[in-house]
Length: 402
Image 1 (cartoon, rainbow, N blue to C red):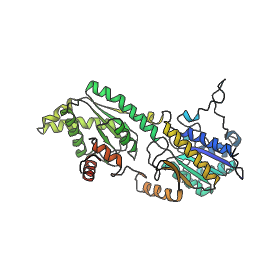
Image 2: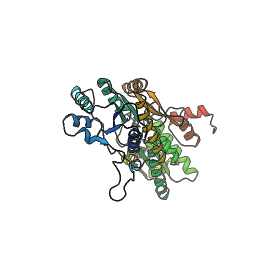
Image 3: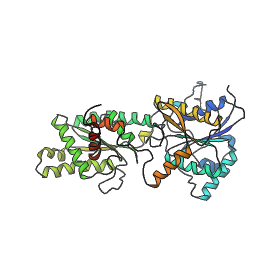
Image 4: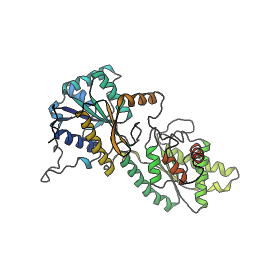
Protein backbone atom coordinates (compact mmCIF):
# COMPACT_ATOMS: atom_id res chain seq x y z
CA UNK A 1 0.00 0.00 0.00
CA UNK A 2 1.20 3.49 -0.89
CA UNK A 3 0.70 5.76 2.10
CA UNK A 4 0.63 9.55 2.21
CA UNK A 5 2.38 11.70 4.79
CA UNK A 6 -0.92 12.97 6.14
CA UNK A 7 -4.29 11.15 6.01
CA UNK A 8 -6.73 12.74 3.59
CA UNK A 9 -10.49 12.93 3.39
CA UNK A 10 -11.56 13.61 -0.15
CA UNK A 11 -14.99 13.95 -1.70
CA UNK A 12 -16.20 13.17 -5.20
CA UNK A 13 -19.37 14.23 -7.00
CA UNK A 14 -20.85 14.11 -10.49
CA UNK A 15 -22.67 17.20 -11.69
CA UNK A 16 -24.80 18.01 -14.71
CA UNK A 17 -25.92 15.34 -17.16
CA UNK A 18 -24.69 11.77 -16.91
CA UNK A 19 -22.42 10.12 -19.45
CA UNK A 20 -20.52 6.83 -19.86
CA UNK A 21 -17.35 6.54 -17.80
CA UNK A 22 -18.38 8.36 -14.63
CA UNK A 23 -18.43 5.20 -12.56
CA UNK A 24 -15.05 4.18 -13.95
CA UNK A 25 -13.58 7.45 -12.64
CA UNK A 26 -15.22 6.94 -9.23
CA UNK A 27 -13.72 3.43 -9.14
CA UNK A 28 -10.25 4.71 -10.05
CA UNK A 29 -10.37 7.44 -7.40
CA UNK A 30 -11.46 4.98 -4.71
CA UNK A 31 -8.73 2.49 -5.60
CA UNK A 32 -5.92 5.06 -5.85
CA UNK A 33 -6.97 6.96 -2.73
CA UNK A 34 -7.56 3.84 -0.63
CA UNK A 35 -4.04 2.62 -1.41
CA UNK A 36 -2.78 5.86 0.09
CA UNK A 37 -4.79 5.27 3.25
CA UNK A 38 -7.28 8.04 2.45
CA UNK A 39 -11.02 8.12 2.98
CA UNK A 40 -13.30 8.84 0.01
CA UNK A 41 -16.81 10.27 0.36
CA UNK A 42 -19.33 10.17 -2.48
CA UNK A 43 -21.64 13.18 -2.49
CA UNK A 44 -25.04 12.17 -3.93
CA UNK A 45 -26.76 14.18 -6.66
CA UNK A 46 -24.08 16.79 -7.04
CA UNK A 47 -24.21 19.80 -4.76
CA UNK A 48 -27.74 18.78 -3.75
CA UNK A 49 -26.11 16.12 -1.58
CA UNK A 50 -24.35 18.84 0.41
CA UNK A 51 -27.68 20.57 1.00
CA UNK A 52 -29.18 17.25 2.15
CA UNK A 53 -26.26 16.82 4.53
CA UNK A 54 -26.61 20.35 5.90
CA UNK A 55 -30.31 19.78 6.51
CA UNK A 56 -29.54 16.67 8.57
CA UNK A 57 -31.19 14.24 6.16
CA UNK A 58 -28.10 12.05 5.84
CA UNK A 59 -24.98 11.20 7.83
CA UNK A 60 -21.47 11.94 6.61
CA UNK A 61 -20.28 8.42 7.43
CA UNK A 62 -23.03 6.99 5.23
CA UNK A 63 -21.33 8.67 2.26
CA UNK A 64 -17.99 6.90 2.62
CA UNK A 65 -17.03 4.83 -0.42
CA UNK A 66 -15.07 1.61 0.10
CA UNK A 67 -12.94 -0.15 -2.48
CA UNK A 68 -15.19 -3.22 -2.62
CA UNK A 69 -18.43 -1.51 -1.72
CA UNK A 70 -20.06 -2.17 -5.09
CA UNK A 71 -19.46 -5.87 -5.68
CA UNK A 72 -22.13 -8.09 -7.16
CA UNK A 73 -24.28 -9.71 -4.44
CA UNK A 74 -24.47 -13.43 -3.79
CA UNK A 75 -21.59 -15.83 -4.32
CA UNK A 76 -19.72 -13.70 -6.85
CA UNK A 77 -17.66 -11.88 -4.24
CA UNK A 78 -14.87 -9.64 -5.45
CA UNK A 79 -16.27 -8.92 -8.91
CA UNK A 80 -15.79 -5.20 -9.48
CA UNK A 81 -18.38 -3.95 -11.94
CA UNK A 82 -18.13 -0.16 -11.64
CA UNK A 83 -16.01 0.39 -14.73
CA UNK A 84 -18.57 -1.40 -16.89
CA UNK A 85 -21.60 0.64 -15.79
CA UNK A 86 -22.96 3.72 -17.50
CA UNK A 87 -24.67 6.53 -15.62
CA UNK A 88 -23.48 7.54 -12.14
CA UNK A 89 -23.91 5.58 -8.92
CA UNK A 90 -23.80 8.93 -7.12
CA UNK A 91 -26.55 10.47 -9.21
CA UNK A 92 -26.21 13.85 -10.91
CA UNK A 93 -28.21 17.07 -10.77
CA UNK A 94 -27.55 20.47 -12.30
CA UNK A 95 -28.67 22.42 -9.22
CA UNK A 96 -27.11 24.53 -6.52
CA UNK A 97 -26.47 27.78 -8.40
CA UNK A 98 -24.27 29.91 -6.11
CA UNK A 99 -25.91 33.07 -7.46
CA UNK A 100 -28.66 32.34 -4.92
CA UNK A 101 -26.96 33.21 -1.59
CA UNK A 102 -29.30 31.03 0.49
CA UNK A 103 -28.63 27.93 -1.61
CA UNK A 104 -24.91 28.71 -1.74
CA UNK A 105 -24.72 28.95 2.04
CA UNK A 106 -26.46 25.61 2.49
CA UNK A 107 -23.94 24.00 0.13
CA UNK A 108 -21.00 25.62 1.90
CA UNK A 109 -22.32 24.51 5.31
CA UNK A 110 -22.75 20.93 4.08
CA UNK A 111 -19.22 20.86 2.70
CA UNK A 112 -17.87 22.16 6.00
CA UNK A 113 -19.66 19.38 7.88
CA UNK A 114 -17.82 16.75 5.85
CA UNK A 115 -14.50 18.37 6.79
CA UNK A 116 -12.93 17.41 3.46
CA UNK A 117 -9.34 18.09 2.50
CA UNK A 118 -10.19 18.20 -1.19
CA UNK A 119 -13.00 17.64 -3.69
CA UNK A 120 -13.00 15.97 -7.11
CA UNK A 121 -15.78 17.13 -9.41
CA UNK A 122 -16.82 15.53 -12.69
CA UNK A 123 -18.69 18.04 -14.84
CA UNK A 124 -19.16 19.87 -18.10
CA UNK A 125 -18.43 23.53 -18.70
CA UNK A 126 -21.60 24.78 -16.96
CA UNK A 127 -21.24 22.50 -13.94
CA UNK A 128 -17.58 23.38 -13.49
CA UNK A 129 -18.46 27.07 -13.54
CA UNK A 130 -20.94 26.52 -10.69
CA UNK A 131 -18.48 24.50 -8.60
CA UNK A 132 -15.67 26.97 -9.19
CA UNK A 133 -17.78 29.85 -7.84
CA UNK A 134 -18.67 27.80 -4.77
CA UNK A 135 -15.06 26.75 -4.29
CA UNK A 136 -13.96 30.37 -4.29
CA UNK A 137 -16.56 31.26 -1.67
CA UNK A 138 -15.75 28.28 0.54
CA UNK A 139 -11.99 28.23 -0.11
CA UNK A 140 -12.20 24.61 -1.25
CA UNK A 141 -9.29 22.62 -2.61
CA UNK A 142 -10.68 20.97 -5.70
CA UNK A 143 -9.82 19.14 -8.90
CA UNK A 144 -12.05 19.18 -12.00
CA UNK A 145 -12.49 16.28 -14.43
CA UNK A 146 -14.18 17.11 -17.77
CA UNK A 147 -17.10 14.93 -18.78
CA UNK A 148 -19.58 15.62 -21.54
CA UNK A 149 -20.61 13.89 -24.75
CA UNK A 150 -20.56 17.35 -26.40
CA UNK A 151 -16.75 17.45 -25.93
CA UNK A 152 -16.95 21.21 -25.44
CA UNK A 153 -14.71 21.82 -22.41
CA UNK A 154 -11.67 23.88 -23.46
CA UNK A 155 -8.01 22.86 -23.17
CA UNK A 156 -8.74 19.13 -23.33
CA UNK A 157 -8.78 17.18 -26.57
CA UNK A 158 -11.23 14.66 -25.12
CA UNK A 159 -13.90 14.75 -22.46
CA UNK A 160 -15.07 11.66 -20.63
CA UNK A 161 -18.04 10.02 -22.37
CA UNK A 162 -17.41 11.49 -25.81
CA UNK A 163 -15.79 8.42 -27.33
CA UNK A 164 -18.65 6.16 -26.24
CA UNK A 165 -21.25 8.60 -27.57
CA UNK A 166 -19.51 8.67 -30.95
CA UNK A 167 -19.67 4.86 -31.02
CA UNK A 168 -23.36 4.88 -30.05
CA UNK A 169 -24.34 7.37 -32.75
CA UNK A 170 -22.19 5.56 -35.31
CA UNK A 171 -24.02 2.28 -34.61
CA UNK A 172 -27.36 4.03 -34.96
CA UNK A 173 -26.33 5.50 -38.32
CA UNK A 174 -25.23 2.06 -39.50
CA UNK A 175 -28.65 0.62 -38.65
CA UNK A 176 -30.53 3.53 -40.23
CA UNK A 177 -28.51 3.28 -43.44
CA UNK A 178 -30.10 -0.07 -44.31
CA UNK A 179 -33.67 0.99 -43.71
CA UNK A 180 -33.01 4.17 -45.71
CA UNK A 181 -31.58 2.13 -48.58
CA UNK A 182 -34.39 -0.44 -48.46
CA UNK A 183 -37.10 2.21 -48.86
CA UNK A 184 -35.11 4.76 -50.93
CA UNK A 185 -35.62 7.36 -48.21
CA UNK A 186 -33.86 10.42 -46.91
CA UNK A 187 -33.40 9.92 -43.19
CA UNK A 188 -32.54 12.91 -41.02
CA UNK A 189 -30.90 12.01 -37.70
CA UNK A 190 -30.84 14.59 -34.91
CA UNK A 191 -28.00 14.14 -32.42
CA UNK A 192 -26.95 16.01 -29.31
CA UNK A 193 -24.73 19.06 -29.52
CA UNK A 194 -26.41 22.12 -28.06
CA UNK A 195 -23.59 24.49 -29.02
CA UNK A 196 -20.83 22.21 -30.30
CA UNK A 197 -20.82 19.89 -33.28
CA UNK A 198 -18.00 17.50 -32.34
CA UNK A 199 -20.35 14.54 -31.82
CA UNK A 200 -22.34 15.06 -35.02
CA UNK A 201 -19.21 15.65 -37.09
CA UNK A 202 -17.14 12.68 -35.93
CA UNK A 203 -20.03 10.22 -35.67
CA UNK A 204 -21.37 11.42 -39.01
CA UNK A 205 -18.05 10.68 -40.71
CA UNK A 206 -17.74 7.29 -39.00
CA UNK A 207 -21.37 6.42 -39.74
CA UNK A 208 -21.26 7.23 -43.45
CA UNK A 209 -23.48 10.33 -43.44
CA UNK A 210 -24.00 12.20 -46.71
CA UNK A 211 -24.79 15.52 -45.02
CA UNK A 212 -23.58 16.79 -41.63
CA UNK A 213 -24.87 20.07 -40.21
CA UNK A 214 -23.34 21.54 -37.04
CA UNK A 215 -23.98 24.93 -35.38
CA UNK A 216 -20.44 26.23 -35.91
CA UNK A 217 -20.53 25.76 -39.70
CA UNK A 218 -24.27 25.95 -40.34
CA UNK A 219 -25.76 28.35 -37.77
CA UNK A 220 -29.20 28.30 -39.44
CA UNK A 221 -31.19 26.50 -42.12
CA UNK A 222 -31.13 29.30 -44.68
CA UNK A 223 -32.03 28.87 -48.35
CA UNK A 224 -28.39 28.51 -49.34
CA UNK A 225 -27.93 25.54 -47.01
CA UNK A 226 -31.19 23.91 -48.10
CA UNK A 227 -30.26 24.38 -51.75
CA UNK A 228 -26.89 22.80 -51.07
CA UNK A 229 -28.50 19.79 -49.40
CA UNK A 230 -30.95 19.31 -52.25
CA UNK A 231 -28.23 19.64 -54.89
CA UNK A 232 -26.08 17.11 -53.04
CA UNK A 233 -28.93 14.59 -52.83
CA UNK A 234 -29.63 15.05 -56.54
CA UNK A 235 -25.96 14.38 -57.30
CA UNK A 236 -26.16 11.19 -55.22
CA UNK A 237 -29.23 10.10 -57.18
CA UNK A 238 -27.49 10.77 -60.50
CA UNK A 239 -24.71 8.42 -59.38
CA UNK A 240 -27.36 5.73 -58.69
CA UNK A 241 -27.55 6.38 -54.94
CA UNK A 242 -31.28 6.25 -54.14
CA UNK A 243 -31.16 7.26 -50.49
CA UNK A 244 -29.41 9.75 -48.20
CA UNK A 245 -28.40 10.01 -44.55
CA UNK A 246 -28.44 13.49 -43.02
CA UNK A 247 -27.01 14.20 -39.55
CA UNK A 248 -27.93 17.44 -37.79
CA UNK A 249 -26.76 18.63 -34.37
CA UNK A 250 -29.52 19.93 -32.10
CA UNK A 251 -27.81 23.34 -31.91
CA UNK A 252 -28.50 24.21 -35.55
CA UNK A 253 -31.20 26.90 -35.71
CA UNK A 254 -34.19 27.37 -37.98
CA UNK A 255 -34.45 29.95 -40.81
CA UNK A 256 -35.22 32.68 -38.27
CA UNK A 257 -32.15 31.93 -36.18
CA UNK A 258 -34.19 30.34 -33.38
CA UNK A 259 -33.42 26.98 -31.78
CA UNK A 260 -35.95 24.21 -32.32
CA UNK A 261 -36.49 21.29 -29.97
CA UNK A 262 -36.83 18.98 -32.96
CA UNK A 263 -34.67 20.59 -35.61
CA UNK A 264 -34.41 17.21 -37.37
CA UNK A 265 -38.16 17.10 -38.05
CA UNK A 266 -38.11 20.66 -39.35
CA UNK A 267 -35.14 19.90 -41.61
CA UNK A 268 -36.89 16.85 -43.07
CA UNK A 269 -39.90 19.00 -43.98
CA UNK A 270 -37.73 21.77 -45.38
CA UNK A 271 -35.82 19.41 -47.67
CA UNK A 272 -39.05 18.30 -49.33
CA UNK A 273 -40.40 21.86 -49.54
CA UNK A 274 -37.15 23.22 -50.99
CA UNK A 275 -37.10 20.41 -53.54
CA UNK A 276 -40.62 21.39 -54.61
CA UNK A 277 -39.65 25.06 -54.95
CA UNK A 278 -36.61 24.18 -57.06
CA UNK A 279 -38.78 21.92 -59.22
CA UNK A 280 -41.15 24.83 -59.90
CA UNK A 281 -38.26 26.95 -61.20
CA UNK A 282 -37.90 24.64 -64.17
CA UNK A 283 -35.27 22.29 -62.72
CA UNK A 284 -36.91 18.86 -63.15
CA UNK A 285 -34.01 17.01 -61.51
CA UNK A 286 -35.30 18.29 -58.16
CA UNK A 287 -38.92 17.22 -58.67
CA UNK A 288 -38.44 13.78 -57.16
CA UNK A 289 -37.43 15.30 -53.81
CA UNK A 290 -41.03 16.34 -53.15
CA UNK A 291 -42.18 12.77 -53.66
CA UNK A 292 -39.23 11.12 -51.92
CA UNK A 293 -40.06 9.94 -48.41
CA UNK A 294 -38.10 11.95 -45.88
CA UNK A 295 -38.13 10.73 -42.30
CA UNK A 296 -36.59 12.18 -39.14
CA UNK A 297 -35.45 10.46 -35.99
CA UNK A 298 -34.07 11.94 -32.76
CA UNK A 299 -31.62 9.71 -30.92
CA UNK A 300 -32.11 11.56 -27.64
CA UNK A 301 -30.74 10.31 -24.34
CA UNK A 302 -29.78 6.91 -25.72
CA UNK A 303 -26.59 8.72 -26.76
CA UNK A 304 -25.63 8.88 -23.07
CA UNK A 305 -26.59 5.36 -22.11
CA UNK A 306 -24.17 2.80 -23.56
CA UNK A 307 -21.54 1.04 -21.44
CA UNK A 308 -18.31 3.05 -21.66
CA UNK A 309 -15.97 2.17 -24.50
CA UNK A 310 -12.54 0.77 -23.76
CA UNK A 311 -11.00 4.16 -24.50
CA UNK A 312 -13.35 5.94 -22.10
CA UNK A 313 -12.53 3.35 -19.42
CA UNK A 314 -8.82 3.85 -19.95
CA UNK A 315 -9.18 7.62 -19.89
CA UNK A 316 -11.35 7.38 -16.77
CA UNK A 317 -8.64 5.38 -15.01
CA UNK A 318 -6.00 7.91 -16.04
CA UNK A 319 -8.20 10.86 -15.03
CA UNK A 320 -9.00 9.38 -11.62
CA UNK A 321 -5.35 8.55 -10.90
CA UNK A 322 -4.22 12.02 -12.00
CA UNK A 323 -6.78 13.71 -9.73
CA UNK A 324 -5.53 11.74 -6.72
CA UNK A 325 -1.90 12.47 -7.65
CA UNK A 326 -2.64 16.19 -7.83
CA UNK A 327 -4.23 16.11 -4.38
CA UNK A 328 -1.26 14.18 -3.00
CA UNK A 329 1.03 16.88 -4.38
CA UNK A 330 -1.32 19.56 -2.95
CA UNK A 331 -1.65 20.98 -6.44
CA UNK A 332 -5.24 22.13 -6.35
CA UNK A 333 -7.57 24.16 -8.58
CA UNK A 334 -6.64 22.11 -11.64
CA UNK A 335 -8.55 20.74 -14.64
CA UNK A 336 -7.45 17.24 -15.59
CA UNK A 337 -7.07 17.14 -19.37
CA UNK A 338 -6.25 14.77 -22.22
CA UNK A 339 -3.51 16.17 -24.43
CA UNK A 340 -1.41 14.53 -27.14
CA UNK A 341 -2.36 11.02 -26.10
CA UNK A 342 -1.81 11.34 -22.36
CA UNK A 343 -3.26 12.83 -19.20
CA UNK A 344 -2.14 16.25 -17.97
CA UNK A 345 -3.63 19.19 -16.07
CA UNK A 346 -4.37 22.87 -16.60
CA UNK A 347 -4.79 25.55 -13.90
CA UNK A 348 -8.43 26.49 -13.44
CA UNK A 349 -7.53 30.17 -13.21
CA UNK A 350 -6.71 29.82 -16.93
CA UNK A 351 -9.66 27.61 -17.85
CA UNK A 352 -12.56 29.27 -16.04
CA UNK A 353 -12.14 32.85 -17.37
CA UNK A 354 -12.31 31.47 -20.91
CA UNK A 355 -15.46 29.48 -20.13
CA UNK A 356 -17.15 32.48 -18.48
CA UNK A 357 -16.22 34.90 -21.23
CA UNK A 358 -17.55 32.53 -23.88
CA UNK A 359 -20.75 31.98 -21.92
CA UNK A 360 -21.20 35.73 -21.50
CA UNK A 361 -20.97 36.13 -25.27
CA UNK A 362 -23.35 33.15 -25.77
CA UNK A 363 -20.58 31.19 -27.47
CA UNK A 364 -19.33 27.64 -27.11
CA UNK A 365 -16.16 27.35 -24.97
CA UNK A 366 -14.66 24.75 -27.31
CA UNK A 367 -16.33 24.82 -30.73
CA UNK A 368 -15.48 22.96 -33.92
CA UNK A 369 -13.20 25.41 -35.71
CA UNK A 370 -13.27 25.66 -39.54
CA UNK A 371 -9.67 24.42 -39.65
CA UNK A 372 -10.51 21.34 -37.57
CA UNK A 373 -9.02 18.32 -39.40
CA UNK A 374 -12.34 16.47 -39.22
CA UNK A 375 -13.96 19.31 -41.17
CA UNK A 376 -11.34 18.86 -43.87
CA UNK A 377 -11.84 15.08 -43.78
CA UNK A 378 -15.61 15.41 -44.24
CA UNK A 379 -15.11 17.82 -47.13
CA UNK A 380 -12.64 15.59 -48.92
CA UNK A 381 -14.93 12.58 -48.49
CA UNK A 382 -17.63 14.49 -50.37
CA UNK A 383 -19.89 15.07 -47.36
CA UNK A 384 -21.98 18.24 -47.56
CA UNK A 385 -21.27 20.28 -44.40
CA UNK A 386 -22.92 23.61 -45.18
CA UNK A 387 -22.46 26.29 -47.79
CA UNK A 388 -19.98 28.51 -45.93
CA UNK A 389 -18.04 25.51 -44.64
CA UNK A 390 -17.72 24.05 -48.13
CA UNK A 391 -16.21 27.27 -49.43
CA UNK A 392 -13.82 27.62 -46.51
CA UNK A 393 -12.64 24.03 -46.69
CA UNK A 394 -12.28 23.99 -50.50
CA UNK A 395 -10.24 27.18 -50.40
CA UNK A 396 -7.97 25.78 -47.74
CA UNK A 397 -7.34 22.46 -49.47
CA UNK A 398 -7.40 23.38 -53.13
CA UNK A 399 -9.83 20.48 -53.57
CA UNK A 400 -7.16 17.78 -53.14
CA UNK A 401 -7.18 14.94 -50.62
CA UNK A 402 -4.30 15.29 -48.21
